[in-house]
Length: 146
Length: 66
Image (cartoon, rainbow over the protein chains, first blue to last red):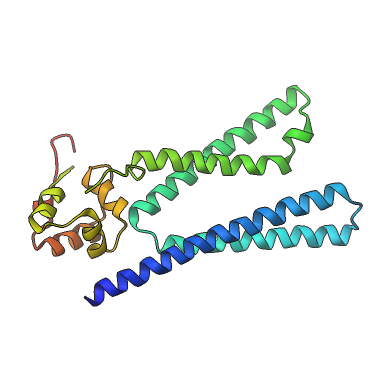
């Protein structure tokens, strides 16, 4: 019975951490979009720009830290799913950067659409693609059970 | 690798959620292992054997292709 209590407590902690990761991801997204908007739209002094960049960096570091902590509470199937999702996202990200890097040598890319700032959302899209593939592979999505 | 988790569960009249709770993993993880999509670690296989009161060899068997 104490084992069940421990597992139940771990489940609660896991859910709590999962929710917190989402909250920190949203905070980072808002800080990034906010910084981008302010730096693009206004004449911001250099020092203020650096502070905004550092704030965004700290928000991202906190999000990543919380994400890594949440892995501790995942079971081995969930860890495998996350790892494979990240491997897929990393590979797709490399493909994107490599392709843009090579294309940049032969054609002039429009930096308004393809600048470094605008590549970040693609990495998240790649992560979710990876997550989708990985979940399907391990039958995580399948709700049919008994 | 094939397994007899479903049979062992049926003997105990447990759902996947019951088993998941007893071995400390998610219900989806049990489903993934039971359907043969994921091969568990030695520790998890031993935990399963313990809750089913049997041996790992009874629950998991190698196939010719393994």
